[in-house]
Amino acid sequence: GYSLKAINDICSLKRPLTVSILPFSPLAQETAQIAHQNNLEVMLHLPLESLNSQEGNDIEGIIHSRMSEEETRQAVDADLAQVPHLSGVNNHMGSKITAEEHQMRIILENLKKRNLFFIDSRTTGRSIAYKLSQELGVPSAYRDIFLDAENKEDDIKRKLIELFRIAQKNGEAVGICHPTEETLRVLRENLGLADKYNIEPVFASQIVHRPRRSPTP
Image (cartoon, rainbow, N blue to C red):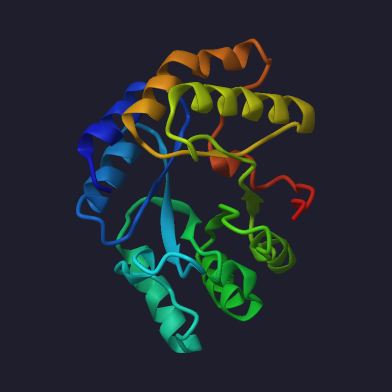
């Protein structure tokens, strides 16, 4: 939601990538529209309170643990309204909220009502979001690999190959990354390696309808 160049570069990859967009970002609606027009899948990148990012916890649309049940519902509604063409949601930050069942239940029940899937970004090993999603009947999956925790091309490529190997071993895997120049360059040059590992890139929605083993902490 911050760069039309980024979304256009993603579209130019011509692969089934799922684009996750922050609510209230300046180009959220335009980004979603471009993704949709190019047959990419759109998620909301739902901001949730973190344990260790005071600056990040101040962004617009974030859901805080101090919110009441009604405030949480209203915040989720407002965030969802910011991004058109949604198929699902994943969390931005959220090491505090995703470990708390009460507030995650409110969020996930809202998503279920709207027939949206949920991807747990797993920003903490204490997250109960995937397990709770499964209990509530919300189509869901969880992140296996952060491709660019280190924004260096060699590291990103190594993580991408690790993602392919997990998918090869387990039948599926979810990778999350950011639209940096380094990451997009690695994807452009190496997504074709999926063929070597006999796997197929797919949208997140094509994975969430299959039950997955719960992640290890």
